[in-house]
Image (cartoon, rainbow, N blue to C red):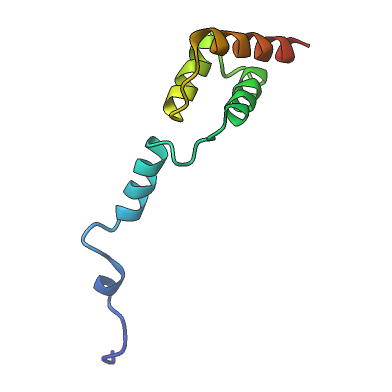
Length: 90
């Protein structure tokens, strides 16, 4: 082996999974999540259509909005949830 040849140690940091952990932390912080009310509403619609949402739509919507850092009045969330339910059932 020559001096220019890389060893296995050259490819690893102290924590070889640091980039994976950082990506998971970003995802948990919501950096990959939708940032608009419309995006979140569409995501909830799609998940209802796929049968992934069995809880109260208002509750699910409120959690998603809170997770994205979007605050809405409870009656506005309920109204949007009703619109989503109406869209999905038609």
